[in-house]
Length: 185
Length: 82
Image (cartoon, rainbow over all chains, first blue to last red; front, side, top):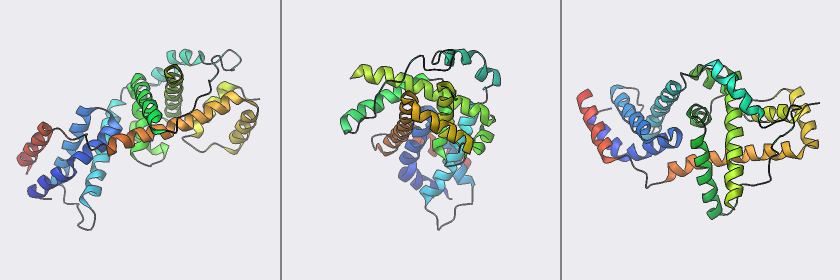
C-alpha cells in the first residue's frame, strides 16, 4: 500500500470504517483511534492482495484493532468482581425458592417503524446504563462470528465468567426495557 | 424439577452455546409449564435481534462521518510513518 493509495482509501472508506467501529465500540474517541491504527497498520503491511477489495481488507484489520480495545477494557475483570457482591443483586430477581420475585411483564418489540425507532432508543439507553465491561462483551459477540470459547480466550476470561456476565447483562437490559418501554407507552 | 432462576440461566446460556441434551430437555419441560420463563426467553431473543439492528443503524447512517480533524490527523500519521 502506498501513501497515495492510503489517501484515496481514507476518503473512500474512512467514513465506513468509522461507522463500523462505532457500531461496536459505541465510543467516538475509541472509534476514531482504531480507524487511525487501521490505516497506519495498512500502510506498513504488504499483505494486500489485489484480488480482494480494499474495504474488505481494511475491515479485516479494523476488526483486530476493535478486539484489542475490547480486550484492554476487559482486563480489569476479576473473578471476585463477577461472583460475589453482584450475586446478591441477582437474587433480587428471584425469591428463596428460585421463583420470579418480579415476574416478567408481557411486552413485545414493536413492528412498525416509528415505534421501533423509539424502542431502539430506549434499548440504547439501557445498554448505556449497564456496566461498560458487560456491554463490551455483549457487543463483542457481534464483531466476529466466532465461537464463544475463542472470544473468551481473547478477553482472558473463562467461559463460566463469560456466561455469568452475559446473563447479568441480559437481566439488566431486559428489566430496564420493561420499566422504560412499558412506562413509555 | 428446575426452578425459574435455573431456567433463566439456561435460557441465557442457550443463546451463546449449545446446551446438552439433558439441559435442553429439562428446560423444555420447564418452559411448557412456566409462562414467565417462556416470556423471558422470547424477550431475550427479541433483544438480541434488536441489538444487532442498533448496530446496523449506526453502520448505515451516512450522516455519521469520520470527523475532518481526525482525517487530517490520520493523514499526518501516515506521512510520518511512510
